[in-house]
Image (cartoon, rainbow, N blue to C red; front, top):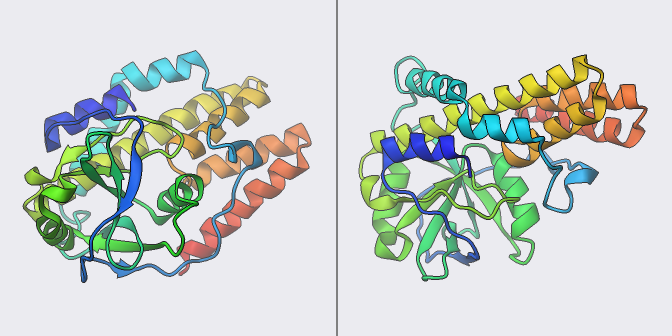
Length: 274
């Protein structure tokens, strides 16, 4: 879990906890909190990420993610833009994705028994989480909710799901969780959404900057691994990462990696038209 993300969230949305050893649980029935999403097909996958771990990041990239003031600055710029017209979503705009069995959202369960609702800023991140962490839960679907609907959901769930987390990485153990008790108004939900969107954009830009520098220096394997790290740990829906992976794969004469990157690019292009 990024120290930078902890700082941003801690200042805007309340307390955070780091939790490990969590299980999953389906929530009690909560009708009417979301709209089911239709799929554009199965999310592609890179062979190197199937283990659920991903490539190791170079130390300088990991250090930059933890300590770079640029990430904070860029994240706040995006966050501020998303909280002002014309980019600010309405209270009824669908903005956050949950994993559901049709009755209610799937939650993480901490060793203490406390439940934490899983939410994602994109259906692709949710799909990736299901594929890696929820294989033993059949008949799961994705649903998308507005800020108003999530306020009602948290009120209906009450103390049995007292926390929520956004964009939980399926390859990392830490959980950045916040209490749902502070999310009593739609504007608070939108604020949290904008923070995670801004942080995701800033982290993606940083990873891509290092990957492009490695590629330009002729270190193709390093460029590939950094871009794969972006897909694994930040977001699977940034087409820039997949294009870079494809370009590097061509130079490395890695036909399988090129096919996998092409599959991702085609999938994202197809999804953007639906």
